Length: 64
Image (cartoon, rainbow, N blue to C red; front, side):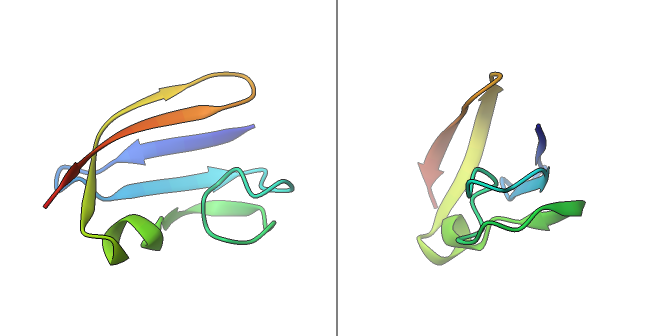
């Protein structure tokens, strides 16, 4: 299970169980603290909306 936060500036933070890479950090690490999803920053994207389900997370992003 993981948690997701969209900051006011559109940065996306995730934390929780990451065994299958579902936190979006490019690894299989779990995290007990929020970590910024750097891939979105690198691609010039900002999160607008997030929907979390039991097995997936969908993020609506906008180009900066």
